[in-house]
Image (cartoon, rainbow, N blue to C red; front, side, top):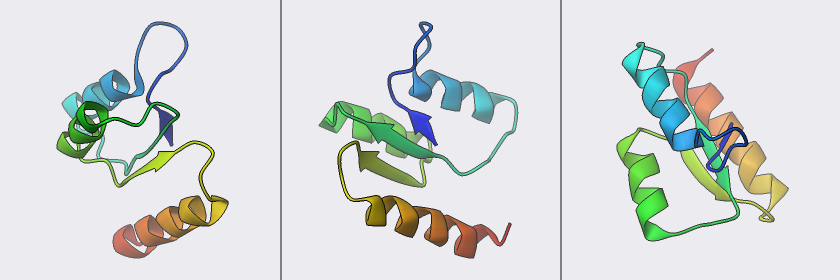
Length: 74
């Protein structure tokens, strides 16, 4: 899981870009309190497994993790 807005100057989106640049295809769930079209679009472009708004249902997070586990079998 990556927060879209990380502390320390790097965004979760930038970290995902770096992951992909190094060949790391680990599935990523993005979490954010700032849900907007541009951010979602960029997360989708970077291959995020799921995008969840903070303060949402814990069930949606659990469902996302289970879907990733089933699809990747890891």
